Image: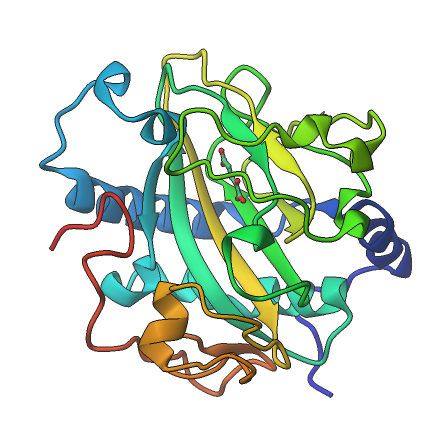
Length: 283
Ligand SMILES: O=C(O)CCC(=O)C(=O)O
Protein backbone atom coordinates (compact mmCIF):
# COMPACT_ATOMS: atom_id res chain seq x y z
CA UNK A 1 0.00 0.00 0.00
CA UNK A 2 1.40 3.41 -1.01
CA UNK A 3 2.17 5.77 1.91
CA UNK A 4 -0.15 8.76 2.13
CA UNK A 5 1.66 12.12 1.78
CA UNK A 6 -0.72 13.41 4.48
CA UNK A 7 -1.94 10.82 6.96
CA UNK A 8 -5.20 11.56 8.76
CA UNK A 9 -5.92 10.64 12.37
CA UNK A 10 -8.55 8.01 13.13
CA UNK A 11 -10.55 10.67 14.97
CA UNK A 12 -10.71 12.93 11.88
CA UNK A 13 -11.86 10.00 9.72
CA UNK A 14 -14.50 9.18 12.38
CA UNK A 15 -15.59 12.83 12.41
CA UNK A 16 -16.06 12.74 8.63
CA UNK A 17 -18.01 9.51 8.90
CA UNK A 18 -20.25 11.06 11.57
CA UNK A 19 -20.71 14.60 10.23
CA UNK A 20 -20.00 14.34 6.49
CA UNK A 21 -17.66 17.33 6.74
CA UNK A 22 -14.17 18.03 8.14
CA UNK A 23 -11.42 20.62 7.81
CA UNK A 24 -7.79 19.70 7.15
CA UNK A 25 -5.62 22.70 8.08
CA UNK A 26 -2.46 23.77 6.24
CA UNK A 27 -2.65 21.33 3.33
CA UNK A 28 -1.13 23.76 0.82
CA UNK A 29 2.00 25.67 1.78
CA UNK A 30 2.48 29.35 0.95
CA UNK A 31 4.36 28.66 -2.30
CA UNK A 32 1.75 26.22 -3.57
CA UNK A 33 -1.04 28.56 -2.60
CA UNK A 34 0.51 31.47 -4.48
CA UNK A 35 1.31 29.39 -7.53
CA UNK A 36 -2.13 27.77 -7.82
CA UNK A 37 -3.99 30.97 -7.05
CA UNK A 38 -2.14 32.67 -9.89
CA UNK A 39 -2.80 29.75 -12.25
CA UNK A 40 -6.52 29.49 -11.49
CA UNK A 41 -6.97 33.28 -11.53
CA UNK A 42 -5.38 33.37 -14.98
CA UNK A 43 -7.55 30.58 -16.38
CA UNK A 44 -10.77 32.03 -14.94
CA UNK A 45 -9.84 35.40 -16.41
CA UNK A 46 -9.10 33.86 -19.80
CA UNK A 47 -12.37 31.95 -19.92
CA UNK A 48 -14.50 34.87 -18.76
CA UNK A 49 -12.78 37.70 -20.62
CA UNK A 50 -15.71 38.31 -22.94
CA UNK A 51 -18.31 38.37 -20.15
CA UNK A 52 -18.63 42.02 -19.16
CA UNK A 53 -21.91 41.73 -17.22
CA UNK A 54 -22.37 43.12 -13.72
CA UNK A 55 -23.43 40.59 -11.07
CA UNK A 56 -26.97 42.02 -11.01
CA UNK A 57 -27.38 41.32 -14.75
CA UNK A 58 -26.55 37.61 -14.43
CA UNK A 59 -28.93 34.67 -13.87
CA UNK A 60 -29.70 33.79 -10.26
CA UNK A 61 -27.36 30.80 -10.50
CA UNK A 62 -24.53 32.88 -11.95
CA UNK A 63 -24.98 35.42 -9.17
CA UNK A 64 -23.81 32.76 -6.69
CA UNK A 65 -20.46 32.27 -8.39
CA UNK A 66 -18.47 32.30 -11.60
CA UNK A 67 -18.08 28.60 -12.38
CA UNK A 68 -15.29 27.34 -14.63
CA UNK A 69 -14.99 23.57 -14.91
CA UNK A 70 -12.30 21.06 -15.86
CA UNK A 71 -9.45 23.52 -15.59
CA UNK A 72 -6.91 20.67 -15.45
CA UNK A 73 -7.78 19.95 -19.07
CA UNK A 74 -7.00 23.41 -20.43
CA UNK A 75 -4.38 24.82 -18.05
CA UNK A 76 -1.15 22.89 -17.40
CA UNK A 77 -0.39 25.07 -14.37
CA UNK A 78 -3.64 23.99 -12.66
CA UNK A 79 -3.20 20.28 -13.48
CA UNK A 80 -0.85 19.53 -10.52
CA UNK A 81 -3.40 20.97 -8.10
CA UNK A 82 -6.31 18.97 -9.54
CA UNK A 83 -4.15 15.83 -9.50
CA UNK A 84 -2.39 16.58 -6.16
CA UNK A 85 -1.46 13.26 -4.51
CA UNK A 86 -1.78 14.72 -1.01
CA UNK A 87 -5.36 15.77 -1.68
CA UNK A 88 -6.29 12.51 -3.43
CA UNK A 89 -4.79 10.50 -0.55
CA UNK A 90 -6.91 12.45 1.94
CA UNK A 91 -10.00 11.78 -0.19
CA UNK A 92 -9.29 8.02 -0.16
CA UNK A 93 -8.79 8.02 3.62
CA UNK A 94 -11.99 9.95 4.29
CA UNK A 95 -14.03 7.68 2.04
CA UNK A 96 -12.19 4.64 3.47
CA UNK A 97 -11.58 3.25 -0.01
CA UNK A 98 -8.43 1.88 -1.68
CA UNK A 99 -8.51 4.41 -4.49
CA UNK A 100 -10.22 7.43 -6.00
CA UNK A 101 -10.51 9.03 -9.41
CA UNK A 102 -11.31 12.61 -10.30
CA UNK A 103 -14.96 13.27 -11.02
CA UNK A 104 -14.42 16.97 -11.77
CA UNK A 105 -12.51 20.08 -10.84
CA UNK A 106 -13.75 23.64 -10.96
CA UNK A 107 -13.20 27.22 -9.89
CA UNK A 108 -16.05 28.79 -7.92
CA UNK A 109 -15.41 32.51 -7.68
CA UNK A 110 -18.07 34.33 -5.69
CA UNK A 111 -17.93 37.92 -6.85
CA UNK A 112 -18.26 40.96 -4.58
CA UNK A 113 -22.01 41.32 -4.14
CA UNK A 114 -22.60 37.68 -5.15
CA UNK A 115 -25.67 36.05 -3.62
CA UNK A 116 -25.73 33.02 -1.32
CA UNK A 117 -25.25 29.55 -2.76
CA UNK A 118 -28.59 27.74 -2.45
CA UNK A 119 -28.59 24.74 -0.05
CA UNK A 120 -28.24 21.43 -1.93
CA UNK A 121 -26.66 17.96 -2.06
CA UNK A 122 -24.07 17.53 -4.84
CA UNK A 123 -24.61 13.88 -5.60
CA UNK A 124 -28.24 14.28 -6.65
CA UNK A 125 -27.02 16.23 -9.71
CA UNK A 126 -25.47 13.09 -11.17
CA UNK A 127 -26.56 9.53 -12.06
CA UNK A 128 -24.20 7.96 -9.53
CA UNK A 129 -26.45 6.82 -6.69
CA UNK A 130 -24.94 6.83 -3.22
CA UNK A 131 -21.43 5.93 -4.32
CA UNK A 132 -18.47 7.16 -2.25
CA UNK A 133 -17.88 10.76 -3.31
CA UNK A 134 -16.15 13.67 -1.58
CA UNK A 135 -15.31 17.27 -2.49
CA UNK A 136 -12.20 19.17 -1.55
CA UNK A 137 -13.21 22.84 -1.18
CA UNK A 138 -9.93 24.76 -1.44
CA UNK A 139 -10.12 28.47 -0.64
CA UNK A 140 -7.47 30.82 -2.03
CA UNK A 141 -8.68 33.55 0.35
CA UNK A 142 -9.51 33.45 4.06
CA UNK A 143 -13.22 32.73 4.12
CA UNK A 144 -15.71 34.11 6.63
CA UNK A 145 -19.48 34.44 6.69
CA UNK A 146 -19.00 37.94 5.25
CA UNK A 147 -17.43 36.76 1.97
CA UNK A 148 -19.04 33.38 1.24
CA UNK A 149 -18.23 30.74 3.85
CA UNK A 150 -19.83 27.35 3.42
CA UNK A 151 -22.32 25.96 5.94
CA UNK A 152 -23.09 22.24 6.31
CA UNK A 153 -25.86 20.25 7.99
CA UNK A 154 -23.81 17.81 10.09
CA UNK A 155 -24.78 14.19 9.57
CA UNK A 156 -27.10 14.94 6.63
CA UNK A 157 -25.10 12.61 4.34
CA UNK A 158 -26.64 9.75 6.33
CA UNK A 159 -30.08 10.71 4.98
CA UNK A 160 -29.21 9.44 1.49
CA UNK A 161 -30.37 11.13 -1.70
CA UNK A 162 -33.11 13.66 -1.00
CA UNK A 163 -34.99 15.60 -3.67
CA UNK A 164 -32.76 17.31 -6.24
CA UNK A 165 -32.34 21.05 -5.76
CA UNK A 166 -32.14 22.41 -9.29
CA UNK A 167 -29.95 25.41 -8.56
CA UNK A 168 -29.01 25.86 -12.22
CA UNK A 169 -32.29 26.09 -14.08
CA UNK A 170 -35.05 27.33 -11.77
CA UNK A 171 -35.56 30.48 -9.74
CA UNK A 172 -37.55 28.61 -7.08
CA UNK A 173 -35.61 25.41 -6.31
CA UNK A 174 -36.63 22.79 -3.73
CA UNK A 175 -36.20 24.07 -0.16
CA UNK A 176 -34.11 21.17 1.10
CA UNK A 177 -33.59 22.69 4.56
CA UNK A 178 -37.30 22.13 5.21
CA UNK A 179 -37.21 18.50 4.09
CA UNK A 180 -38.90 16.49 6.90
CA UNK A 181 -35.94 14.06 6.93
CA UNK A 182 -33.79 16.81 8.49
CA UNK A 183 -36.07 17.05 11.54
CA UNK A 184 -35.15 20.71 11.87
CA UNK A 185 -31.35 20.29 11.69
CA UNK A 186 -29.72 23.43 10.31
CA UNK A 187 -26.45 24.26 8.52
CA UNK A 188 -23.42 25.33 10.55
CA UNK A 189 -20.96 27.81 9.05
CA UNK A 190 -17.29 26.91 8.78
CA UNK A 191 -14.81 29.79 8.49
CA UNK A 192 -11.34 28.81 7.26
CA UNK A 193 -7.98 30.28 6.31
CA UNK A 194 -6.50 29.99 2.85
CA UNK A 195 -4.31 26.86 2.69
CA UNK A 196 -6.83 24.76 4.63
CA UNK A 197 -9.24 22.48 2.83
CA UNK A 198 -12.85 21.73 3.76
CA UNK A 199 -14.08 18.28 2.77
CA UNK A 200 -17.73 17.42 2.33
CA UNK A 201 -19.39 14.15 1.45
CA UNK A 202 -21.42 14.17 -1.78
CA UNK A 203 -24.66 13.80 0.17
CA UNK A 204 -23.97 16.42 2.86
CA UNK A 205 -26.40 19.31 2.56
CA UNK A 206 -24.48 22.56 2.20
CA UNK A 207 -24.82 26.17 1.18
CA UNK A 208 -22.62 29.29 1.18
CA UNK A 209 -23.28 32.80 2.45
CA UNK A 210 -23.46 35.85 0.18
CA UNK A 211 -20.31 37.86 -0.48
CA UNK A 212 -20.94 41.22 1.17
CA UNK A 213 -17.31 42.33 0.84
CA UNK A 214 -15.64 44.22 -2.00
CA UNK A 215 -13.41 41.32 -3.03
CA UNK A 216 -14.07 38.11 -4.93
CA UNK A 217 -14.02 34.95 -2.78
CA UNK A 218 -11.81 32.58 -4.75
CA UNK A 219 -12.26 28.84 -4.30
CA UNK A 220 -11.18 25.80 -6.27
CA UNK A 221 -12.75 22.38 -5.80
CA UNK A 222 -11.82 18.86 -6.76
CA UNK A 223 -14.43 16.11 -6.53
CA UNK A 224 -13.29 12.50 -6.03
CA UNK A 225 -15.22 9.30 -6.57
CA UNK A 226 -14.37 5.75 -5.42
CA UNK A 227 -12.87 3.41 -8.04
CA UNK A 228 -15.81 0.99 -7.87
CA UNK A 229 -18.52 3.60 -8.45
CA UNK A 230 -21.03 2.75 -11.18
CA UNK A 231 -23.46 4.71 -13.27
CA UNK A 232 -26.95 3.92 -11.98
CA UNK A 233 -29.14 5.37 -14.72
CA UNK A 234 -29.48 7.45 -17.86
CA UNK A 235 -29.38 11.21 -17.26
CA UNK A 236 -27.07 12.97 -19.63
CA UNK A 237 -23.89 13.90 -17.80
CA UNK A 238 -20.95 15.25 -19.77
CA UNK A 239 -18.09 13.25 -18.18
CA UNK A 240 -20.00 9.97 -18.47
CA UNK A 241 -21.10 10.52 -22.06
CA UNK A 242 -17.60 11.57 -23.10
CA UNK A 243 -16.05 8.50 -21.45
CA UNK A 244 -18.78 6.26 -22.91
CA UNK A 245 -19.87 4.91 -19.50
CA UNK A 246 -23.19 3.06 -19.82
CA UNK A 247 -25.75 2.40 -17.09
CA UNK A 248 -24.44 -0.31 -14.74
CA UNK A 249 -20.81 0.14 -15.79
CA UNK A 250 -17.93 1.26 -13.58
CA UNK A 251 -17.18 4.96 -13.96
CA UNK A 252 -13.80 5.14 -15.70
CA UNK A 253 -12.16 6.28 -18.91
CA UNK A 254 -11.35 9.48 -20.73
CA UNK A 255 -11.27 12.55 -18.49
CA UNK A 256 -11.73 10.52 -15.29
CA UNK A 257 -8.13 9.84 -14.15
CA UNK A 258 -7.23 7.67 -11.16
CA UNK A 259 -5.55 9.95 -8.61
CA UNK A 260 -5.11 7.49 -5.71
CA UNK A 261 -3.05 5.33 -5.73
CA UNK A 262 -1.08 8.13 -7.37
CA UNK A 263 -0.01 7.53 -10.97
CA UNK A 264 3.74 7.47 -11.69
CA UNK A 265 3.28 10.50 -13.92
CA UNK A 266 0.66 13.21 -13.91
CA UNK A 267 -2.40 12.30 -16.02
CA UNK A 268 -2.58 13.61 -19.57
CA UNK A 269 -5.83 15.51 -20.23
CA UNK A 270 -8.10 14.53 -23.13
CA UNK A 271 -7.50 16.34 -26.42
CA UNK A 272 -11.00 17.67 -26.60
CA UNK A 273 -13.15 19.48 -24.10
CA UNK A 274 -16.73 20.38 -24.84
CA UNK A 275 -17.74 24.02 -24.87
CA UNK A 276 -20.80 22.84 -22.94
CA UNK A 277 -18.88 22.00 -19.78
CA UNK A 278 -19.40 25.19 -17.88
CA UNK A 279 -21.40 28.35 -18.30
CA UNK A 280 -18.22 30.36 -18.61
CA UNK A 281 -16.22 28.07 -20.86
CA UNK A 282 -14.97 29.71 -24.02
CA UNK A 283 -12.03 28.86 -26.17
O1 LIG B 1 -18.51 27.67 -3.13
C1 LIG B 1 -19.73 27.74 -3.15
O2 LIG B 1 -20.33 28.81 -3.04
C2 LIG B 1 -20.54 26.48 -3.30
C3 LIG B 1 -19.69 25.27 -3.39
C4 LIG B 1 -20.44 24.01 -3.53
O3 LIG B 1 -21.65 23.95 -3.57
C5 LIG B 1 -19.65 22.78 -3.66
O4 LIG B 1 -18.42 22.83 -3.64
O5 LIG B 1 -20.28 21.70 -3.76
